[in-house]
Image 1: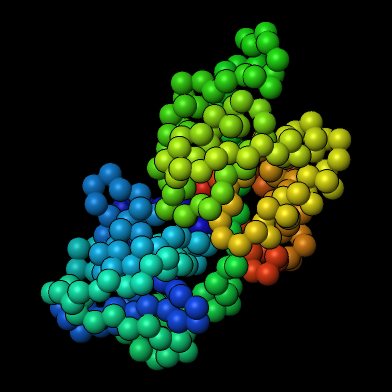
Image 2 (image 1 turned 45 degrees about the vertical axis):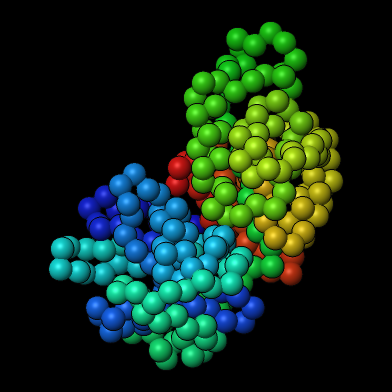
Length: 299
């Protein structure tokens, strides 16, 4: 999981942009260096949004984020700089125009990239990318946003709606998760789950598919059936959003991590799952290769 963002650093974001077996490097004439597409945040911008924007500005590629790779810190003239890097898949051909900031774009193999990059910490980012491999699928596991107080709700609990705070979280999710380029949206049938991903689905122009096996009652009755269904969603190529509940997500994430011997929390009690949070699970040929926790919708 990625580390906390330091408040006393200059913040920037970028990515190892990949297509097939190649990754993109850019040349900056001001510094005469080769690096990844990256840049500083605009006011009020998230790290994830900055990474996608910088990719497009520096390469002309529309990209979607995948797993987090690593965070890099180093000294600059104005203080300390913090750069967060993701793997990002190119979704369009490069519409690159040389300019005063970036005058050349090259697509190279990771081995060539290691020898071409100007900074050792960038070579470490490539090494992490190679170790993980580009994911063949990504699962965005969302816990539903805040709902009205259970004790104050007298109706069927399946119909309990989001609170005002939960509606705000749902809007934040709709701003964040499109950066990951979802292809489909699936939800437990509870109203609070569907309503959490409804703004996202609307923004993407996608339907919401109901899946009762993602609900807490189904998981309590047959956890193996729920885990099997989650694996089926994870096996679909591209990016799938699944919205579930707090009684389901820790067990599912822990089981997938144990299967892959991934060095993240594998005890159910150690897997965080705040309301409105998202687990970004990267998979390669069905096996979990990364697990990143976004504890706040705006992360």
